[in-house]
Length: 380
Image 1 (spheres, helix red, strand yellow):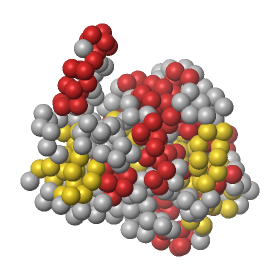
Image 2: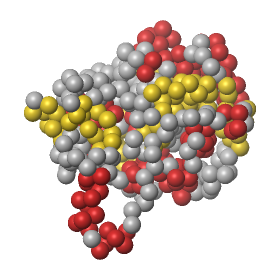
Image 3: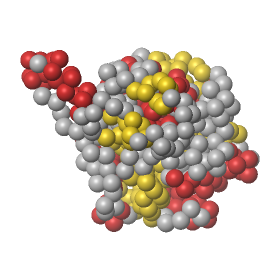
């Protein structure tokens, strides 16, 4: 298993500079030994949480996407497909606002509708899940190449190349997984099961303008001026965590994937090529605050009290009445059915599992995640 991650400096979303950067990162990460697409069918899987303007840094930038397409052509790919399925898609979703559909049209590649023909794929070695319903595109290509955006994530702290495969599960079909695995550890286990099942070949991470703060949908653009690349997606995610200042061993997905010993035996088993980590590190990156482990003995002795205390003081979604447009996206995606619209969006915190799906899909930044002792879910 390759353990090399390429770090390449790139400061602008300019086509030629991006293509040069992706080409260099592919070579540094192993070149043809790491990814040989000559004569193969390839799926490019960008990161489209929601169909948002590229300026918000929610999605893989369209020019980064274009450069990836052009690199695949240059490397001799026989056919290139692309697609994604955000958490709350419209029928026939095409990613027009984020600019990716236009790039497909201009570059002459096929945009694939992930919701069209789901298939069941088996996960015999899965710890949390033994099968998934995913887009049938996975059966039609030789290589899946992940194009994640470097971002924070309210539930999982960080979202990168491994979590990007979650988009292969169509739309609202993702919601039951949040209900089945409401905790970080369980959800991480499910994501690693999916990653092991899909087995993507390579990843190029868009770390030119990343997202800090309350990601993955409502954070703030942060210029980080990097392209990351590797055929080892765990190694890439660990390196990205180090770049923005996280200890990678406490990120749930990293920790779970390392424990399986398939991709890495330790987070230290990584070779960085190109820039050094010190050269690439970003200062002042606003991260999601890590929560400590619970006191299991105390929970055993006083389970009801601890449960109520967690419900009251744990971070929770709070709705901003003045910003809310009552679109209903949050209500439709909520796996716990904790939300309803009654004049304003109402939330039952006793049902809420703190998956923050509502926060992810809100198109108006009308939801904040905060600690509060109040049982009221609405701010004026």
